[in-house]
Amino acid sequence: MKKLHHSVYVIELNEKVLKDKKFLAANPQYQEGAGAIPLYVGMTGLAPEQRFENHRNGYKSCRFVKKFGLHLLPEMYERYNPMTYEQAARMEKRLAEKLRSEGYAVWQN
Image 1: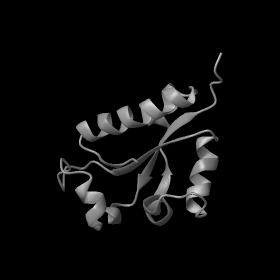
Image 2: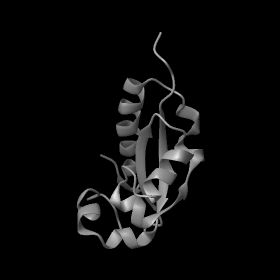
Image 3: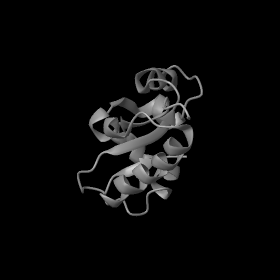
């Protein structure tokens, strides 16, 4: 049986990220003034809290999280964890798509 030690996680980003052309290009559906906050969606084999700290400290970090990361939003991801690596890879994409469809601007790679 495969180990269930991977997780997806969601980080709220500062709204200043919405001035970044690359971030906006990844979110053509985003409508300014709609009230949805910008987010980062990722997956990890670490605890989400540790992965967030790694981002903030510049270790294997996404530049948007390092510069604009505010805090984790566990209410958006806890129910999915833990899972296998394969499940987490699929869920990361699905969760980002779901949040975009709800109007959020999301960075996920």
